[in-house]
Length: 107
Image: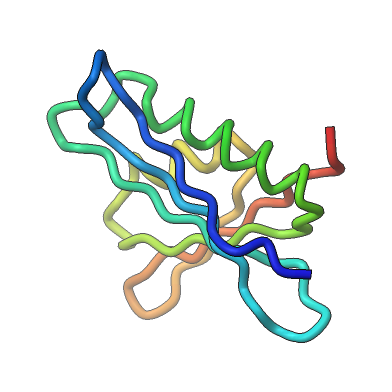
């Protein structure tokens, strides 16, 4: 089964200031996906990342994804803290922080 890609935008009024992407990892028999986030610097710490993460996790649950993977720079503590609020576990490898989230069963 392939889920393709799901992209959400974070809007304030009619302007988009952030996005989140859920992309299937296409390996045989694998129920994993990768997530990526981008929030404009001037609009960070306003709850946009949390809203996007919540939607991405719900989308993953409802598509039967068993594990989400994310990569950010080791120094990107705000992104790591955001993901940890949603149950992510990180380990550092060659200057990158590799995170994993288990989204749970479909809702």
